[in-house]
Image: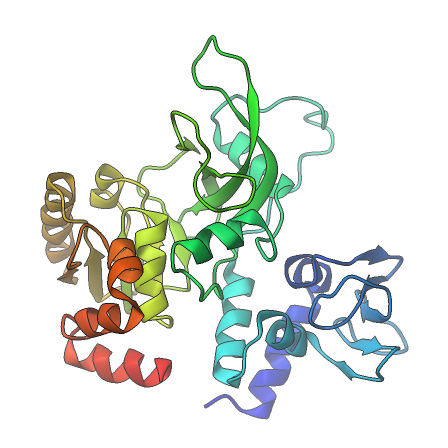
Length: 347
């Protein structure tokens, strides 16, 4: 159980990154001098709430006051209210996840001019794309995920929204722009090594009506799109939607999307990992990735357990069978210690 001292330390850590917290959770506002200005703690557009971005004689960074209502608090309150969380354990988990997220690396000031384009498809181009994108709250990315049955979006800071992401059908075709879900691909230290783009219809009702709806860029081998902080137990699968569907059913288990069967087979293991759940798809490529990953895990002394969907993948299970059926199917496949651990946390 987290003590008051632990909570204070977590709030102080958030305060040291106050502007990043505000940009992530209070994206409807903007910086005004040494403060972040927004409508209220629930991220309503406006100007009545002020978050202190730097410590001053008046108080530490991260403290906020809403002049319209008299409400005040710290950045843990911002996370709770902006994400609609109720249990303090969920607030703590979300705060810890945020603190583990990659921060876009600042561009070198002298070695490169800001206008110098990064090589197409490079890790640097991926980092710049992620830095230019915005949090998914209230965007077509959020609408798209909800249309896929994915409504539990805490811990998804590695996903962002770009309103006009370039798309070229081939090397000779004209460039188009579509809204896109941008996923940061990171290594085990949290450094962005690549990005994955899913182009969307403007209203988020589906993917964009284009020939190639998904593309990845950067250094992908061994890396993944991560949801949560892996320790002794984690799950890994191929697609973002399939992994997020399993994450919806087991929200406190860290998970990673490797983006393809080949990359899933090659995913790198955290040093602390003792048990790996493999979120497989029901197809030949998924079977091959499963077998390779089981062999690699066993060789590394890691227990590997395969999680199998009823239908084609876990997102189809979620959409067609419902969350209760998905949870029931996953629960019987977990190791008993993890049922006790993760189901009690989710209850």
